[in-house]
Length: 216
Ligand SMILES: [Zn+2]
Image (tube, rainbow, N blue to C red; front, side):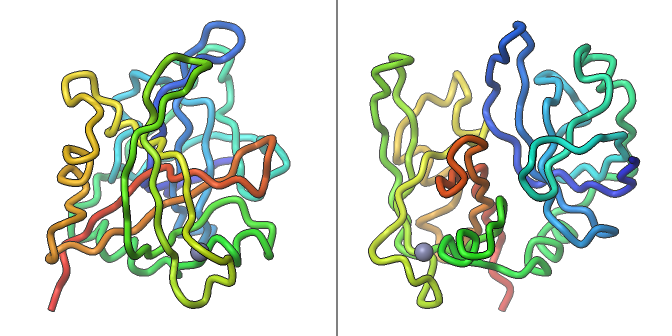
């Protein structure tokens, strides 16, 4: 099928697939489907896969998670990327309006409704680094609350996958990450774009943090 209007909202850090391809998982929003959609595998050096771009793509159903799609011809990811067309690039204001138009949810509701993606309005965000023994790397984690409607007791603690957080020159430091996402700036309201793990459906990860400027 063809999706005409996928607006790229969140891009995860690159991962190596079994046959040597490098992919980034993407969460986008389609106005036509009125849903968040997951796209994979996407070419990790694609210039078209960029936050705020509205793209037209050819996809097939991906895994059994809701609204998961695979790009066609993804065995050759450069070729699959050639099929992607940029429709337009949204302005910061248009992105802000779009994010606000998507109903915010909670981790509790996502699990209850067996949904695999959502947008959460968090409070009490804390960013930490944790050492992963398996890959010998520090990884960023976010601790937060997603509000009174969430029936999960206590705070959520989830890995941050946003590719922006893993930039080589930036270095992984909690204070740098806090300023990258404007977390301590009262003029900004953070939104978390979360998605679940394909093998562990009740485990959610933060794919991206979107901070929009507060408009009085
Ligand atoms: Zn919650």
